[in-house]
Length: 414
Image (tube, rainbow, N blue to C red; front, top):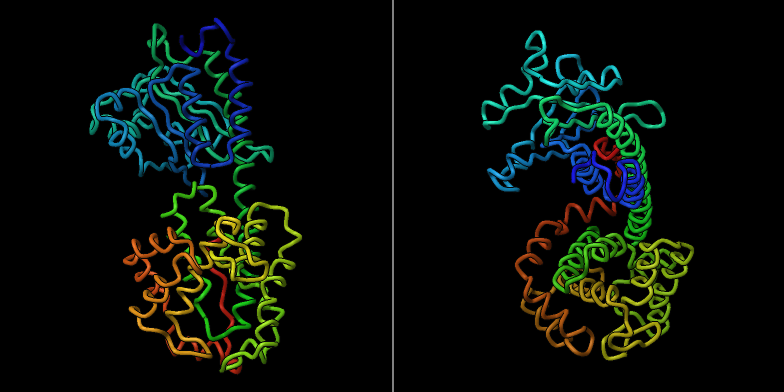
């Protein structure tokens, strides 16, 4: 049954279901693919491209073609559209739709007077043996009346293919494009909020790192190691992402530890050690006000990353799987980095010595499966160690208050 046949549900009942699906999808890439797939299905189009506006250009972010997929296979067909981009101008169908904010519906692209609009597809058609005829381009306009992209559908299928896209197809596409514009805008806002949240967490982590200047890139390395271990342990993508976002916060509690203890070059006495151990409690208290999943995981990591598999750790003496997995992972990543880098109270251990200590800790300090995972990923671990190693010049610069320089923000991140 095509998108224009009624049967069990009308096109507009289908639009309601699609709208619900769009609002429940927060991943922007998945959202764009869903928009295009549903648009093609509902108007029975052979092909389609979804363009997102970037300044004066429209960049293809999703493209599908049933004919080319059947001929070439999914993977190769998708790569044909990777570099598609057209200007917002009257010289192309999509560019014209974006420029005028009006629907462009052409039953036969090659029958129109002049070759201006047809020229944009002619080169693609010649190269890939395709024939573009009917083209429907619908601007996606957000609630602020800004064009954020264009939905282009190509070649009507079925018995009406010679006539091109009809009035019902246009109405369906307009409704879907309107829903899509709002969904894309919401997904972008959600992504911005997540990034702001992540940046705030990272800022707190860096503040703690500035207190402990002997470990300039410790946070980066521990985060990378944790990601490697989490992946090796089979964490789902969502949990792995949370782990990578939350790991930098493991030592945020050191903000509350006195400098005399934090920077002491020798061994801590019993009282100093007890004070140092409170950084787990301080960190958990700092992170206690956050209700998001990232903050909840960050709090678990800050509180429990000094617990040990055999129950001899602190602050609660948890044992085995009673320790949250995220904290078990960061515990190993943290200790591995501490052993393999210089600290104010010791020099870096040789790699062989580090591995000996880690192996001995399996079943006592660390979950044995985690140790196995680290040993199996040593090549990647060593790459991270070398890529983010602390040079003496960097360590000296980190301590040199008289010559601290202002770093300009990276414009690419905004």
